[in-house]
Length: 148
Picture 1 (cartoon, rainbow, N blue to C red):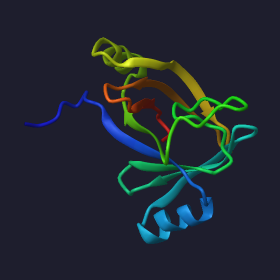
Picture 2 (picture 1 turned 120 degrees about the vertical axis):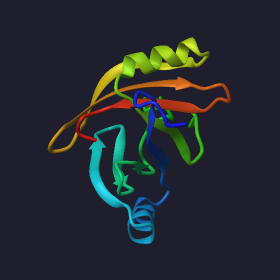
Picture 3 (picture 1 turned 180 degrees about the vertical axis):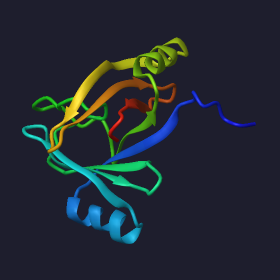
C-alpha cells in the first residue's frame, strides 16, 4: 500500500549534545550528514544546527547550555530537564494546525499550540510548529516550513 501524499513525513530528531563539537563531528564526518543550518537564540539556545541526512531529513543538535525543554520552550530557573538525549521527534506536515487538531482528536495531549517561530540566523528562517504528547509520553513536533 502506498502512503498517502497528505500523510505526515519524518523531518528531524532533536538531540542535546554534552559536547557539541564532538557530536557535530560524529554526524558530519562519521555519518556523512551535511550542516544545513546553524542557529542560536540568545539567552535560550547557545548553539544548534540542522544536519541534513541528504534527503531533507535532519538531526537537530542543541548545545549543552541550551535552556530548551523537549517541546522547545525555555527551561525555567531551577526546573529539571524534561528529557534525556532525545528531545522530541518531528513530523513534516503541510498544515501545522490540521496535524495538531488531528493528533488531539486521536487522544494526544496538547503541549504547545501551533505558532510561528523564526530561527535567528542570517537569513532568518520562519517555521510553523506545534507540539503534542503521544500515548506513550513521547513528545511529537509538527513542523511546516518552506525553507527547511
